[in-house]
Image (cartoon, rainbow over all chains, first blue to last red; front, side):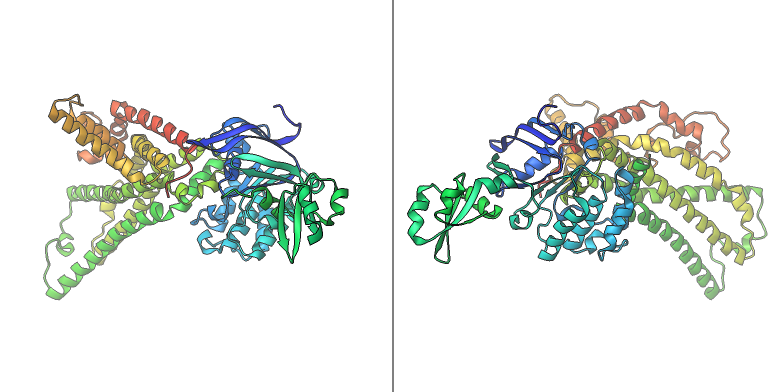
Amino acid sequence: MSGVPGAIVHARALTKRYGASAALDGVSFDIEAGRIVGLIGPNGAGKTTALKAILGLTEFDGELSVLGFDPRRQRSELMEQVCFIADVAVLPRWIRVREAVDFVDGVHPRFSREKCIAFLAHTKIGPGLRVRELSKGMIVQLHLALVMAIDAKLLVLDEPTLGLDILYRKSFYESLLADYFDENKTIIVTTHQVEEVEHILTDVMFIRGGKLVLSATMDEVGERYAEVMVGPDRIEAARALKPLNERQIFGKSIFLFDGVEPSRLAELGELHKPSIADLFVATMKGTYA
Amino acid sequence: MKKFGLLLKREYWEHRGGFLWTPVSIAASIVAITVLGILSAELFSTRARINVGFSLDTLRGHIDANDLFDAGRGLDMAQLTFAGIVGIGLFFVTFFYLLGALYDDRRDRSVLFWKSLPVSDLETVAAKALTAALVVPAIALAVATLAYAAFVAVVCAWAGLHGVNALPAVLAAHPFGMLLRLVATLPIGALWALPTVGWLLFWSAYARSKPFLWAVMLPVVALIANWWVALLGGPHVGNELTLAGVLGRLLFSVMPGSWIASSGSLGAGLHVPLPLGDDPLLAALVPAHAYQALTTWNLWLGVAGGVVLLAGATWLRGRRIETAT
């Protein structure tokens, strides 16, 4: 395989069409080992399609290799190294906790029953319960316990905390970082709750209308983008530097700049590192218009 | 091997109600009805102080070897009846299990969980096919056998209360021989069932909604269309029995024992000693008779068609995830 050596995911001109519209329109990217990549985009931007392609759950055009496998043809080999949580609703509702553990233990060569049971011991989930008897938060705890007990190289999370309350959301990402992630693992996550993941991401990809509009490490984002809080007297000067976005808070204007020298911005006012959420909103302006 | 065992177990876990409790409740009902019948007969004869119809008290004195032989054969037929009645219930269980097997998890999206594990589509489909063709009939046979044992115990106890020793009749029956014979027919039944297993799994994997309509209406429409075209004098399958036969094979071959009537082994002119007497149904189960089914085109064409349909189901399983709802 060509591309970046050590790339976990290698995609070139990835394209997927549904009739006339393209869910993915010639997307190319590489994801290296040991990264936590946030794939962020508005509804219908192609995030889930990209994940499905990586997981071998959909046909596509273009070149894609995941851990050196072709996800279209080698899905069952690939799934020994890749774990996947879609959203909380995908665990079968009839299965008992005990049966789910037994099943994954039986079919997955890299699953550790001890680890899984240790994770479950921190929850209120009893082995005899059925999934349909668990709350949404408990279902995702169970799914996470199953997945974290698998020594996989790539973990794909598609809106994993959708519909959960903030306690479950926080503890989901905390256990992921504390008990699972290390330099040999890679995580790709899509979510709308950007604020909750941005502090754990190492890389970010913005996707819009099937195209990548930004693909950068968080360090690069910090170097490239800056937010300045500008007083009323400097507004015209700030606008002259072609800001990406402008918004008002407490009578002051906040400008978001892309690639403007920090020294010039410092003259205008107080400099901040923009949040991913603000950057996202600025980048996606006009998406639904 | 451990992995495939887990796949079979998973099917059992999900469908324990159909695979185990349906045959158990059917078999238990038969035993319960027997007990109720005995109780009401006892009650009635005690109250009326007369012997009605079949009375064990008068029977006691006059039992000869021929009667014993008949009683033994009656018990053998009873054993077969248990298996047969449980089998009828099983047909419905298996039919709807297969229709849902590759559809229900797509509808509730749990397919995304199953597909997140290193299990190939071929393994998934094979496990479901084997479950329907062999595992479910085997469970049902085990349940029917236990129920038959309970039935014999009840009848013996009843006869004993009236001072009749029923053991000679039981000894004249062939419970173990019958069981072995029934077990030996399981592989034949599995091969015979393949076209239906394949047909139903195919539509289960194909349908975006209502797999039942696809699987059942399509053959019915084909049958009517053929009849209509024939009526108008157009090109059609000339022998309607052939078309109906093919469609019947696609829909009803999971009926346990359906191979007996259709495969030609019933009343086949084979001259082997029949220890169970000359009853045609019992004779059909003699392995030398039963395995004649393996020499028929009907069976092997069905197997071939079933394998093609299963391959199609596997292919679809790799490509269809969403349903309409």
